[in-house]
Amino acid sequence: MTALVAVALVTGLVAGFSLSASSGTAGRGGPQNPASQPFYLTLLITGGNWFNGTVSDQPSYFVLQNNSTLSSSTITMPSDRRIVLTILNCDNGTDQLSMPIFNQAMGAANDTVGVASARGLTMNELQEPASLAGMAGWRNMTTLSSTDISHTFTIISGAVVVNVPVMPNSIEVSGFALPPGQYIWQCECSCGNGPGGWGGAMAPSEWMSGVVNTVS
Ligand SMILES: [Cu+2]
Image (cartoon, rainbow, N blue to C red; front, side, top):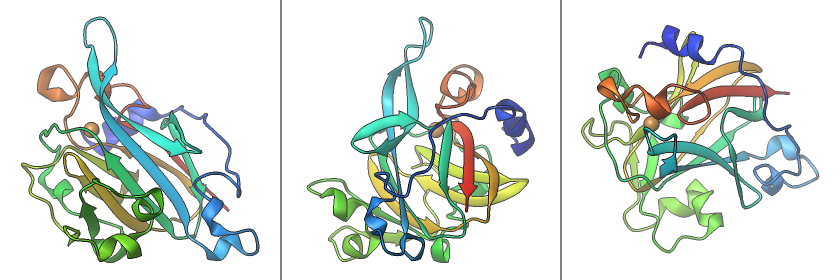
């Protein structure tokens, strides 16, 4: 799927939840000067979501906030602030990338992602790269094996501005910051149904694509 096709797919989709400085993802920033603190965005990927009567099980992204899974159709985050992105991938499947380049971390700090196994971690550990980095099995990676990618979290504004390739059954932490604006996010791995895997979850927004709004 090209970026242009993806833009067409999600154009006109604006909804979602409002940004709150005391929300679950921002709450660790502290009340005094939250803008100087990271904003914690935690995304969950699960594999077996009922899609429809023809295509039963499809993977989907969710925003994990205040111990709830929220729609990922619109993801709101502060602009010009360090975003600590934690992706919890509970999907063990692998699929083909739309283009080979999407096996590379792009736009994240140092163009790396940290990859760990989920076993026995606390939420604080999950959301803090510094605490994860010293753990056994933690790896900082710039490029993942293209045959071992389950999904990507890719943010696009004309060009790709962030790309996080996601291994099956993994936790990945990365960091980035974006100027104010509206972006497209999408998975660049053919994890859906139908010809080539680009149907099913890959077709509508919310499952594997949507909008990112960054607000000051
Ligand atoms: Cu996907």
